[in-house]
Length: 395
Image (cartoon, rainbow, N blue to C red):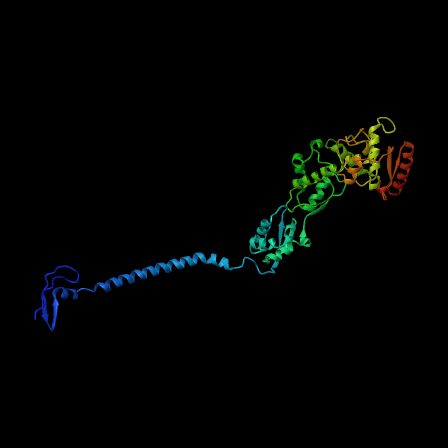
């Protein structure tokens, strides 16, 4: 039996198809042709597999790249920013004046004392003592915990600073030498700094002369303080002491000059006010008994730059220096040394009295005798000469 002729194929197209018979089956010609092609579904499925493989490969490459780039970041989040401590070895760290906590942390991190500045800041934030860290040099260990480093810095016993003590009565060149020896700054740098008095805060009344304005005290200078910075600190201290003694700005130079003579003439605080009074009495008297001459040995010592002996020689007193008060009446041109606070106070407020003379009759004990007349003074001078006969090497 023959099948009726098909009007449409399964794809919806119109075809002139024929039926072929054979071997017990019935086929259209189009069906026969379809057997010779690869199935459409299989070819699409293979293409999708290839795309999937490529996509997976891209994802794998991107993932590896991301892992390589992000791993340090991730490790940074997971890894501690602090050393466990207690550390080992030793390293010196300098905390400068004015350093903030962040600056200190950066210094510690650079020296490998702490692992990170942040760890130090975190430790400092939780410890009120951190605000009391003082400038200076500290010896710490490498790779300490931040808390351990902080504990070292807040303990004053671990702090060392360049300390220098300048005693009263030194000349400026002696002050320079003492500063250089204690701080390690070359002597020439102090001499050079003194040539720029304006940068040191020296008042105009000093006329550029630094003598007398380097206040004697114990100083803790920052580790890297320059010669100029050190001298500026000392000048500022002198001006502060003059203000504390109630000295008007216009009287600073004169008061400091009188104070320096007081400093050069006495060895004990008890006589400073009386010596200052002798100076003022002599300056106010143009006639006898002194004719306005101070006749102070300390000014002659400065003029000839000699130390170590009591009194002066005839040759020293013949010096033509304006600082020789045996030759020139009135005050010398300026201070002759660095006076301390006691001498500044004495010069600002001398002890009331009518003395015109004084002499230290025993330099060993500092005993000093004052007189209102030349005859009384002459007797006191004999006591001093008797002492000198027993100490010829010191007169």
